[in-house]
Amino acid sequence: MVDLVRQEVAAGASIIVVKVGTRVVTRDGGNLDVDWIESFCEQINDVLATGRKVVVVSSGAVGAGMGRLGLTHRPTDLPMLQAVAAIGQSALIEAYERSLTRFGRHAAQILLTAEDVESRVRYLNARNTILTLLELGAVPIINENDTVSVEELQLTFGDNDRLAAIVTNLIQAPLLVLLSDVAGLYDGDPADPNSRVIPLVEKLDRSVFDLVRDRVTGLTRGGMASKLEAARQATATGGNVIIARGKEPGVLRKIIAGEPVGTLFLAQGEILAARKRWIGYTVKPRGRLVIDSGACHAIVHGGRSLLPAGIVDVQGEFDKGDVVSLHDPEGREIARGLTNYSANEIRRIRGLKTSEIVKELGYCPYQEVIHRDNMVIITQSLSGSS
Image (cartoon, rainbow, N blue to C red; front, side, top):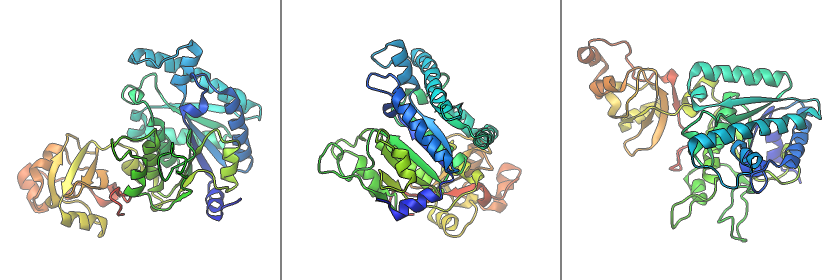
């Protein structure tokens, strides 16, 4: 059965980013599921044959390394984790390359760290490399560089969901597909036989995020919260997202055919330029500015820049040119932007009129703390409002 909305989404997906989780790409015990990878690559070839381009964000390096080394438990020691990831990554890319060459295609390994996407120059270099590989007909296989990453490697689940959303925004892909070990977003506990997969989410607000939280403990179940956050980042900039079970036979073919597989999250915001995607949805803010209600209204509804007079509080330490987040008096994030002043400078000029900046600092290189051109409104508020 073909769904007309999904058919339209698939028709507009000239580039598709597909993220596969560890439990999808490996068997029980951690060994790579070579049969699944071969089937997956056959589906990728079918998608490429339609004229579309495919980028894969693949987890599984640590799990593959465990399988290759015969380990039964995930190491907890960081150097051992990094060594296992290095061994596993080679096995992972070998499997993709071997499967794709059957169809005359090639896998191109790209390993990224947070620093690669937070540096504007390295971010653009990564974007240009990926787009060039796509023009050459190759399939970029992207993973986090676990052999040198420290903070991200210690996360047990969900880090590649964020990476997939970043890659989606990096290359402005119209569709992100998150292939997991669950069939989609459920309307209740997935373990409850009465729970059903929600086929369509038109508005990704707080009520949707509440579906993946245990109301007694407040803990998230599995990695769905991570996937919803990835969906929020991708849909907020004009992309569509589908969460589906990775080991469902022919899942990628079904998605491209417009069949009702998994949960579809429709695009929420306007399509942003690449630079604003980087500011708003890639770089982690270095600090926070709390602004008054008047400044909030001027920024969100009036398209204005942030002036020092509207700043109530400065949190964190950051330098000129860093990305900071803007929060309303209730603590809700409304925007992100590149600051023209350091945290210490803003603490001195907050609440002042523009004409008073030079008296306080002895200089006034900018009238605005954040210029509108360097600011992105965060449209998907988890409070339920846009």
